[in-house]
Length: 331
Image (cartoon, rainbow, N blue to C red):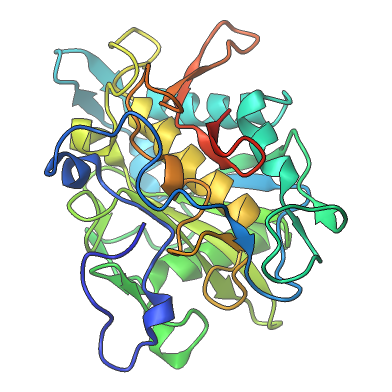
């Protein structure tokens, strides 16, 4: 989605974040979610010559900080008590399921590719995204300094500085993503998803956005893709809590927003892994495949829904992703 404020001085307007998962509360200010794709539902097109996609998309889930090891408990609006351990289980189970099953949800991404003509809206050749993606594992990182209450990043008020530039040197999220790449190994097809603990935020989180994906450059000059995934569960409805389900013992309902938002950023990274330096698939308004289908009410065409069950009988809330071939939100 587009930013709600103009670019900062000296920042190219093309670097205003189009890849932010905006908070539901901001959408609701102008009425309930639309019963269908939002305005600007023109097709995605290939933006840059040789722009990459993630052909074998992999997600590494990084629970950053000793807070995750110590743990905490939350109370949902309905009075249910949920632990940080349940949050970890829910989000890793979600990615294990998506990474082991060729879901219809992720199948929407396989129509997109790299290596076709700029402006293409379909792929007759090129290198395609495959389904299922790969769950590469999780890591509770207690080896590095824990994240502070307010984590410096490169996206203040939804305006991001150019990743890898000298202006980006204070970006602790990018630094953590680079540590994760050292831990798991470098993977050009990976999304290093940084899960922040409770009471730790980046500027604008919850109020202006729920999460975003970005990129960082390692010491060898290679780009990696990562996601800033704040602990949005205490934002409740503002970032999708109970958007699809009522609370149950596993965490459906209270954790709905966790899988909706993480899935949004995962799907966008598959189709646009380097959004600042080499954009891949976007529409003419700058929206990515997740943006175009965000916060459509369950039951409406292209609305949020559950996928699953997995081998243990658990389902997970997701939003649909934009499909050029279907001309709408699908999956």
